[in-house]
Image (cartoon, one colour):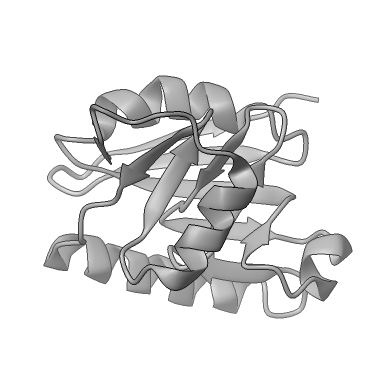
Length: 153
């Protein structure tokens, strides 16, 4: 994520209004807006493969698999993120026409040198405010490494 250094507070409503009109995706964190960097080929290949496998695995469930074009709203953390892959099985998300979901059960992020620290740190903390989240998975694009964090009931 790339932040505008001279940025002032932006309300969630203003962020959403601007995001609907802007062809460039931005994430929102506690009043600040961050431009997203475009994906490279390994990222796209990994995402396509994971989405395909998840759709096959979940085909008999009332769940949907979403790509990075849909935001996750984290109300308690005051954030909107575009996870690389998200799954929701909550009927409230399935019936809404909003351009974000509220109740992810699985979030997958692909690590890059520019995002790894934040994905493991601040973003992970923010995602943990989603009470519906059961698994947070970090996938390396440059190594054969996957980190999986599961909620223990």
